[in-house]
Length: 113
Image 1 (tube, rainbow, N blue to C red):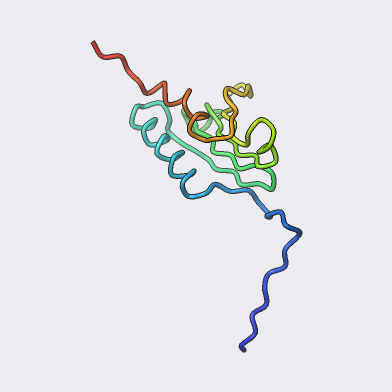
Image 2 (tube, rainbow, N blue to C red):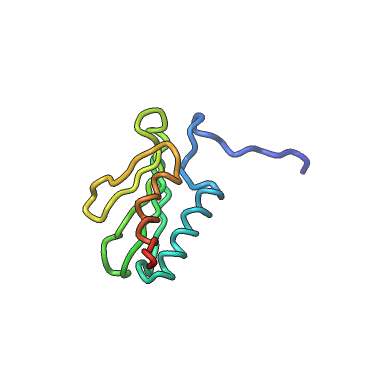
């Protein structure tokens, strides 16, 4: 009754990639502002062995307008964060989340006379 058996680990690599709380908070904050502005209506999250993806949709039945991807395997190369357009083109890639989200946040800015 007093023995605890740990779950087996398959090496040092985790079984899936996920978003940390602060990353998800930043992404969901942007999502909320885009919903309030009328740009997005739905989202989906994919957690896989190699990538974690947050996809934002204009409408539910369409392809995602943008995808925010986290690929830790690219951490030492181009950066683990990528902003991918609906067409599949990479709009921005980097080591930090905030600069990668900058092109989407620029859409929220409005000029005031």
